[in-house]
Image 1 (spheres, rainbow, N blue to C red):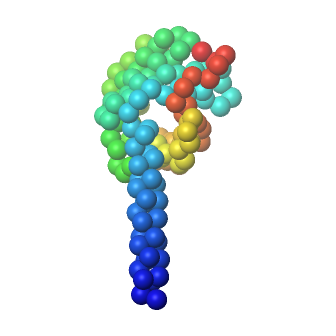
Image 2: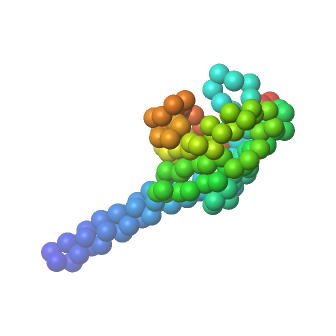
Length: 142
């Protein structure tokens, strides 16, 4: 009887440890790498090259580039602060971007993409959206 209880306890603990590791590690796969973004209701497409602290975002149609500083608040929550770029921005738009931050929450990670929620100064803030970042380019969109 003790042997069965011990085996059950070890099995449950092992499963819990493995599940916990996967849950915590999944969002880490979105911290570094190349990502593709196709905003809803838009013909625009973007390529994001991200390391743990910076994002270089390139509009694939215009080649316009912007640089953002990234701070990870939790495994699934990051803040992005505008650094430079986007040649078409007015002085007022640059000032606005510099004064605010984009907050992004990774909602779900799948083998080919991750979904996110984002907004200005908070996930539900101004301009909030829910969308998808892809790990590989979608055919016919670049």
